[in-house]
Image (tube, rainbow, N blue to C red; front, side, top):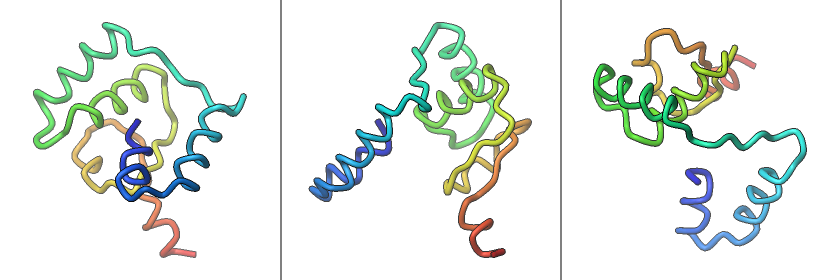
Length: 95
């Protein structure tokens, strides 16, 4: 959902279509949002200052599924303890 917001807002039809195709790939797993995920997301929101609901859901899923690396460009994830993450811009700057 979040990846589509900006392309839709900008009326970027090509990028919107690219994201939709990406999510239809067999290698992409779309997971249901369960009560366990919502519970973990609520606990994260209660303990991590400034963490927004969609981000808390992403983190909860990553932690519950044993994510080994969370790739993002959102520096706000630095506030989340125990999340193995990398900031994509930092990686690209080091190339």
